[in-house]
Structure formats: structure tokens, C-alpha cells
Length: 363
Ligand code: AMP
Image (cartoon, rainbow, N blue to C red):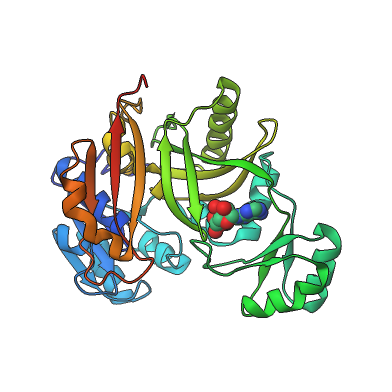
């Protein structure tokens, strides 16, 4: 049903489930467009809560907190895909719209559901099989072979909850390593590059895509993104058609990040998608006309989508753990734009900020 509040007028209030750095950058973009932001996060003084009008400190499934959020907000979005589905259902029942919707969330929360959905809509992925117990593990190994990658179905991120099987005989040990949780066994993608496409769909069904980015991971964590990636028109068109298929099939509203493997010969397969703004889209803050954060706010607010063209070439580097202590040196580099998340403790590997290094597009 159409929401009578849309498009949201400046002065309206946007709720965000999750108070991490993505919520923080969404809140800053929303503030620039004249919205107030209320964050729900169980952790006091969260990175997003400290730049928002207000934070409700409570677990995501706390009914009283969800009621307060629904009362305060005209529309609610989220900054991470592991928001409990029940929280979204509760907010919807309380009469506040949540975007992206429950369908996107359900597909993105479970790697088997995600890859089955992609297969249904004709989007290529690596071969996969579901694993629940020793019998289905044996069947999955018989189907997929080895080497192969065992991942937990739920809650995995940044390479966590994953174990490689070099040989079929490694299967039991790999299953033990991921805690014998429901899992997916994936064929290895023999990729030449990891690419991603950040795209958005508006309330009216309009779709826009950003130029592709090339991504480098270390230990499963994104280290660097370079964008716009040098890709053929055929690869760009294929990536954009994949994003459009996913967005349309999910009746999606907001920004999505679609991670792709480019195989030898230029074939693309989808690794996964994230129903939110995405780390590989941080380059758009300094590289594109309208960045992914403002784009997401525009989409959920029912505003027209903004232009996505690149204005500069950007190399985005995540500042992990103590690397953030180089901030003064980075701030002195004329080509660098620093984005820090205001997190207290620089634990090893923790995403503390990122730097976008710019150069002219024509290099
Ligand atoms: P994910 O948590 O699924 O995004 O995986 C994290 C990283 O692990 C990816 O960015 C890839 O570098 C690598 N990876 C994930 N799945 C596969 C696969 N099926 N084959 C090869 N590498 C993979």
C-alpha cells in the first residue's frame, strides 16, 4: 500500500536499525537533506548515535524500543542485514514502513536462500549445496567436490564462519571449525578479479547503478577498492543487468551492494548481495555526483534518485585497528579524504575509518 507520508518532507524523521559506521554515514547524509535521525542500537554512544538526533539503547527485538522507534519515525531503514526479521515485522505492524523490505532481508540473511533466489531469477552463482548434518555434508561433498568452501548459512561476514576443504577427507574437520552450524558448501570461484556494483531502486521503480569497483580482500576483509574499475562495456552491462534483476525481483527500495567474481574470459558470477549501503561503495562519497548514503536516504524517503556518474578516480583503503593512528599523515595528503567513525577502541582488524585517495578520471 502506498505510504501517504511519501515523499518525506525535510523535517521528517528517519529511523535506522544499527548504530555502526554505515548508520553514521547514513545519518550524516540524512541530516544534510534536512531529516532527523533516530538510531536503535543496543550499544550506548554508538558511532551513528553520536551524530544522530537521538539513540534508543535497546536490543533490536525489544518491543518497547520498537514501539518508541515507530512512534518517532516516518520511515525506518537498517544498516546491517542481520536485523531480526521479527523486528521488521513488528515495526510494520506498528504502522511504520521499513525499507528495504522483509523479502530482501530474508534472502540476504541466509546464504542458501540467497543463492536459491539468485538461481530462480537466472543470476549465475558458484555451484552450492546445503549442509545441516553429517549426511547432508557427505552428499554436498559428493556433489561439489574439493577444494570447496564451507560457510555458515547465517551471520557470516568479513570471512568469518568459513572453512576451506582442500580434500573430501577434510569435511568433518571443516564442519567442526564452523561450529557444526547449518551451512552451505560452495564450489571455488576461480576468479581473476573481485568486482562489485552498487545500485539503487527508488519508490517508483527507477534503478540507477554506480560505476563498478574492483575490490581486494585480505583474510576475508575488504582492504582496498579501486573505482571506477577498468571493465569492458559487456561486463558493465552484465553487472548492471544482474543488479536490476535482483532489485526488481525483490521489489527493492534503497541501495544494494552486489559482490561479483569475474572469471577468466569475462564471465560474472554473484558471490553475495547486501541489502544496504556497502563498504565497496564508500568511494562514491568523494568520487561520484551523489554518494551511496544520500542515494539510500533519497530512495527510502521517496525522493528522486540522484546522478551516479564518477567525478574522480578513487582508491578507498579501509583503516583497520591501529592503522587509524596514521590520521595526521593522511590528513596532510592533498589527494586524501579521511572518513573516521569515532570508534573508541582500535582493536586489531576493527574498521575504524577509511581514506579515499583521488586522482583525475583521465589518468
Ligand atoms: P563472503 O563472506 O562470502 O563475502 O566471502 C569473503 C571473501 O572470501 C570473498 O570476498 C572472496 O574473496 C572469498 N570467497 C568467498 N566465496 C568464495 C568462493 N566460492 N570461491 C572463492 N573465494 C571465495
